[in-house]
Length: 178
Ligand SMILES: *[C@@H]1O[C@H](CO)[C@@H](O)[C@H](O)[C@H]1NC(C)=O
Ligand SMILES: *[C@@H]1O[C@H](CO)[C@@H](O)[C@H](O)[C@H]1NC(C)=O
Image 1 (cartoon, rainbow, N blue to C red):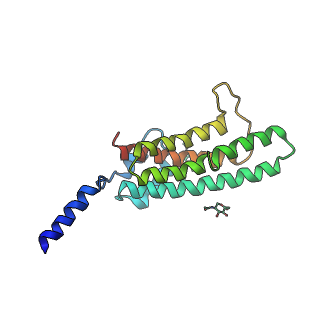
Image 2 (image 1 turned 135 degrees about the horizontal axis):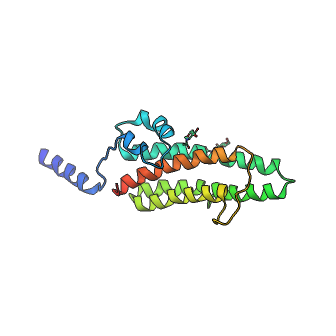
Image 3 (image 1 turned 120 degrees about the horizontal axis):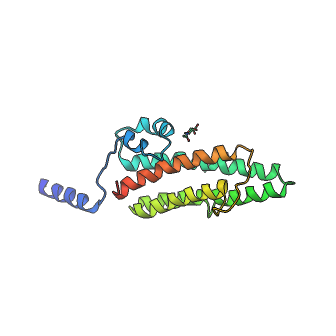
């Protein structure tokens, strides 16, 4: 009997290509482009957890932040319906943060690539969120003049950016690049 059990254990180990990986929270949070204080506040309760647990937790937080941002932008679109320049800025941003092509859609693709073990694909989708942030706040092209936004959007969007950047670093560790 016992030799069959060890055979099953062996098969299970071979079938799962992902070996548990723990990276110190401080190492992730001290990355030069990471918002260290936000990162430590976010991840400290998960110290010692497997990278995939950290990633899933960060994805959940990112989802909430993106959702809050989309809700805010929808409010702004209604509030500024008479100001065409503002309105077109917020409509552009809602597409960049919402579904299906913006950040909210990317989060779903991040989750599915992660579940498939495609960490390179996951990394690319996280990068698209960072690019979406930049296109909304700074403009799509380096020659664009950023919209002088006095609303809360730049602040909300910055949190999305900062959380996404933490996920970007985590996905680098999952790939094994660092
Ligand atoms: C880090 O994030 C916090 C919370 O969102 C924010 O108040 C702070 O300005 C951020 N720091 C930097 C350097 O961006
Ligand atoms: C996103 O936010 C809205 C408004 O707060 C809420 O009704 C909705 O349930 C949220 N969506 C998810 C999937 O959490």
